[in-house]
Length: 136
Image (cartoon, rainbow, N blue to C red; front, side, top):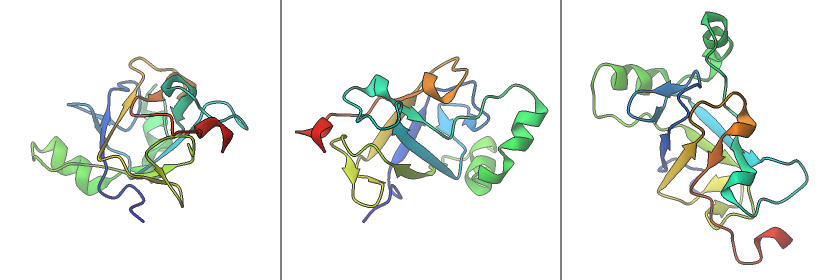
Protein backbone atom coordinates (compact mmCIF):
# COMPACT_ATOMS: atom_id res chain seq x y z
CA UNK A 1 0.00 0.00 0.00
CA UNK A 2 1.34 3.39 -1.01
CA UNK A 3 -0.43 5.67 1.49
CA UNK A 4 0.36 8.63 -0.74
CA UNK A 5 4.13 8.52 -0.19
CA UNK A 6 4.93 9.00 -3.87
CA UNK A 7 2.05 11.33 -4.64
CA UNK A 8 3.01 14.88 -5.57
CA UNK A 9 0.71 17.59 -4.18
CA UNK A 10 0.00 20.79 -6.09
CA UNK A 11 -1.91 23.24 -3.92
CA UNK A 12 -3.30 26.63 -4.94
CA UNK A 13 -4.90 27.36 -1.55
CA UNK A 14 -2.91 30.54 -0.94
CA UNK A 15 -4.79 31.40 2.27
CA UNK A 16 -3.56 28.28 4.11
CA UNK A 17 -0.72 28.35 6.65
CA UNK A 18 0.89 25.41 4.82
CA UNK A 19 0.95 27.12 1.42
CA UNK A 20 4.41 27.73 -0.08
CA UNK A 21 5.33 29.59 -3.27
CA UNK A 22 4.86 27.80 -6.59
CA UNK A 23 1.73 26.00 -5.30
CA UNK A 24 3.59 23.72 -2.91
CA UNK A 25 2.06 22.27 0.28
CA UNK A 26 4.36 22.54 3.29
CA UNK A 27 2.27 20.30 5.56
CA UNK A 28 3.71 17.04 6.83
CA UNK A 29 0.36 15.29 6.26
CA UNK A 30 -2.98 16.21 4.71
CA UNK A 31 -6.45 14.71 5.06
CA UNK A 32 -8.66 14.60 1.95
CA UNK A 33 -12.27 13.96 2.94
CA UNK A 34 -15.89 14.12 1.84
CA UNK A 35 -17.27 17.62 2.29
CA UNK A 36 -20.55 16.30 3.67
CA UNK A 37 -20.24 13.80 6.51
CA UNK A 38 -21.99 10.50 5.81
CA UNK A 39 -22.38 11.22 2.09
CA UNK A 40 -20.12 9.87 -0.67
CA UNK A 41 -18.58 12.47 -2.98
CA UNK A 42 -19.65 12.31 -6.62
CA UNK A 43 -17.86 15.49 -7.75
CA UNK A 44 -14.55 17.17 -6.92
CA UNK A 45 -16.54 20.03 -5.40
CA UNK A 46 -17.82 17.58 -2.75
CA UNK A 47 -14.29 16.88 -1.46
CA UNK A 48 -12.11 19.01 0.81
CA UNK A 49 -8.68 19.26 2.37
CA UNK A 50 -9.47 18.97 6.07
CA UNK A 51 -5.92 20.08 6.90
CA UNK A 52 -6.60 23.62 5.67
CA UNK A 53 -5.73 26.14 8.37
CA UNK A 54 -6.50 29.76 7.52
CA UNK A 55 -3.45 32.05 7.54
CA UNK A 56 -4.96 34.95 9.46
CA UNK A 57 -2.03 36.07 11.58
CA UNK A 58 0.87 34.79 13.63
CA UNK A 59 -1.39 32.80 15.96
CA UNK A 60 -2.77 30.79 13.03
CA UNK A 61 0.77 29.79 12.04
CA UNK A 62 1.53 28.82 15.62
CA UNK A 63 -1.68 26.76 15.70
CA UNK A 64 -0.59 24.69 12.69
CA UNK A 65 3.07 24.34 13.65
CA UNK A 66 2.65 20.68 14.68
CA UNK A 67 1.95 19.67 11.05
CA UNK A 68 4.86 21.21 9.14
CA UNK A 69 7.21 19.30 6.85
CA UNK A 70 10.21 21.24 8.17
CA UNK A 71 12.84 19.68 5.91
CA UNK A 72 10.76 20.00 2.76
CA UNK A 73 9.54 23.51 3.57
CA UNK A 74 13.01 24.83 4.42
CA UNK A 75 14.60 23.28 1.34
CA UNK A 76 11.84 24.71 -0.85
CA UNK A 77 12.17 28.18 0.68
CA UNK A 78 15.96 28.01 0.17
CA UNK A 79 15.36 27.57 -3.56
CA UNK A 80 15.91 23.82 -3.79
CA UNK A 81 14.06 21.73 -6.37
CA UNK A 82 13.12 19.37 -3.53
CA UNK A 83 9.42 18.44 -3.51
CA UNK A 84 7.87 19.07 -0.09
CA UNK A 85 5.07 16.55 -0.52
CA UNK A 86 2.90 15.69 2.47
CA UNK A 87 1.68 12.25 3.44
CA UNK A 88 -1.87 11.86 2.10
CA UNK A 89 -4.64 10.35 4.19
CA UNK A 90 -7.75 10.04 2.00
CA UNK A 91 -11.19 8.86 3.10
CA UNK A 92 -12.89 9.53 -0.27
CA UNK A 93 -13.58 5.88 -1.13
CA UNK A 94 -15.79 6.94 -4.05
CA UNK A 95 -12.68 8.22 -5.89
CA UNK A 96 -10.98 6.21 -8.62
CA UNK A 97 -7.57 6.84 -6.98
CA UNK A 98 -8.56 5.84 -3.44
CA UNK A 99 -6.75 2.81 -1.98
CA UNK A 100 -7.61 0.59 0.98
CA UNK A 101 -6.18 1.97 4.19
CA UNK A 102 -6.91 5.61 3.30
CA UNK A 103 -4.31 5.79 0.55
CA UNK A 104 -4.11 7.65 -2.76
CA UNK A 105 -2.88 5.99 -5.97
CA UNK A 106 -2.67 9.19 -8.04
CA UNK A 107 0.84 10.27 -8.98
CA UNK A 108 -0.21 13.93 -8.57
CA UNK A 109 -3.15 15.50 -6.78
CA UNK A 110 -4.23 19.09 -7.06
CA UNK A 111 -5.89 20.83 -4.15
CA UNK A 112 -7.77 23.97 -5.19
CA UNK A 113 -9.44 26.77 -3.30
CA UNK A 114 -7.63 30.04 -3.92
CA UNK A 115 -8.79 32.58 -1.30
CA UNK A 116 -10.46 29.85 0.82
CA UNK A 117 -11.76 30.83 4.26
CA UNK A 118 -12.41 27.30 5.57
CA UNK A 119 -11.70 23.70 4.60
CA UNK A 120 -15.10 23.40 2.85
CA UNK A 121 -13.85 26.01 0.35
CA UNK A 122 -11.12 23.62 -0.83
CA UNK A 123 -11.39 20.67 -3.25
CA UNK A 124 -9.32 17.77 -4.50
CA UNK A 125 -9.45 18.62 -8.22
CA UNK A 126 -7.92 15.22 -9.03
CA UNK A 127 -11.05 13.44 -7.80
CA UNK A 128 -12.47 11.08 -10.40
CA UNK A 129 -15.61 9.11 -9.59
CA UNK A 130 -14.92 5.40 -9.24
CA UNK A 131 -17.30 3.16 -11.20
CA UNK A 132 -20.15 2.56 -8.75
CA UNK A 133 -18.43 5.06 -6.45
CA UNK A 134 -21.41 6.58 -4.68
CA UNK A 135 -22.80 3.14 -3.81
CA UNK A 136 -19.76 1.95 -1.83
